[in-house]
Length: 257
Image (cartoon, rainbow, N blue to C red; front, side, top):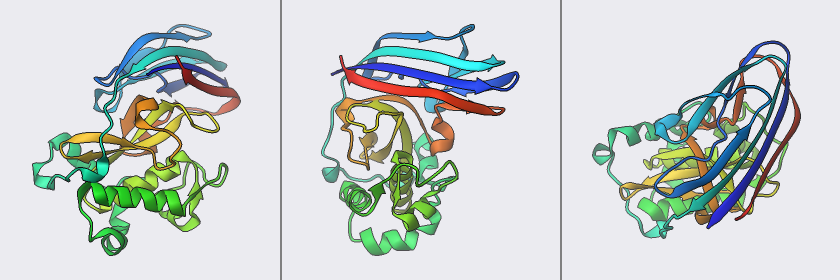
């Protein structure tokens, strides 16, 4: 599967401003970058590795405006396993870099959900438990743009029972961690997302490997191009400005190559 990606970011700035972007599709064992071009109104940004060395963070200092266009073609070669049949690892057997994804984080207060998870999913193990959690989110939460904001945590989403992709991702991550399944958020470009945008999904650690899950149900793992990973939305923001910024235009378009 080849995905064609076309992204436009246009923001007004109000003085010299440091800006951090994460929009490049990542080069990984499961996806190969066939081409990638970033067009800016000034010089090229400085690149540094993103979390876990997956993807890149782009630093730039602009004075008046960010006006970028990123186009890429990505070949996806991802084997999708039946998660329900996978076993879970004992925490003491997990690689050190995986263990941190068991801990609560800013938007995923998993420590507050342990009693709920034990009551609702305690009879299940491994992948079967994760599938039940994912079904719970898909069946009990509504995708409603505009009902959450940058401060909304999984605790608030649990009460509201609605949100957008990052809220669905935070909810599943929180339940998984409370059930002793490491989970992290992943920013992706994906077919099937409506409306098209930067999309947030989840990776869970089962049977010694990471596996992609989309709790919104809009995209399949074989149709996703990963950008970056992290503990929660704090780590995967597509644009962070260290000063005021005003949106002028933004678009994400993902099609089959």
